[in-house]
Length: 102
Image 1 (cartoon, rainbow, N blue to C red):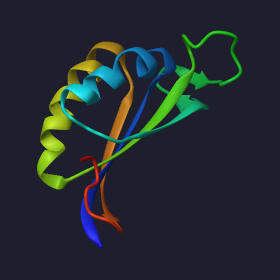
Image 2 (image 1 turned 60 degrees about the vertical axis):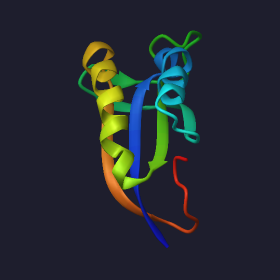
Image 3 (image 1 turned 180 degrees about the vertical axis):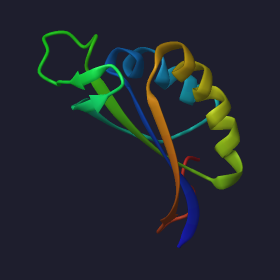
Image 4 (image 1 turned 90 degrees about the vertical axis):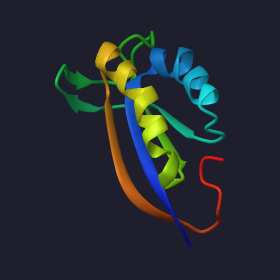
């Protein structure tokens, strides 16, 4: 097992589709997963995933990254969350194979 950081980001689907891929590519995060149409409750109220447009829909992005690269990722994500909103949670995890986020 190999130590990694699990970074979970919840942002608008529009933002996830337009901005996050370029941001993650720029800092050389090779892999991540996206779950779209996430529903729940947050500071802006209830979020439903059955809208006709993606403006108010949310996506859940999961990134596994080496612990030594975490700060680079957070420095890139933080301004986006401050400007557009969203949530980011970081936790310790164990990967079966080395290379999370390479």
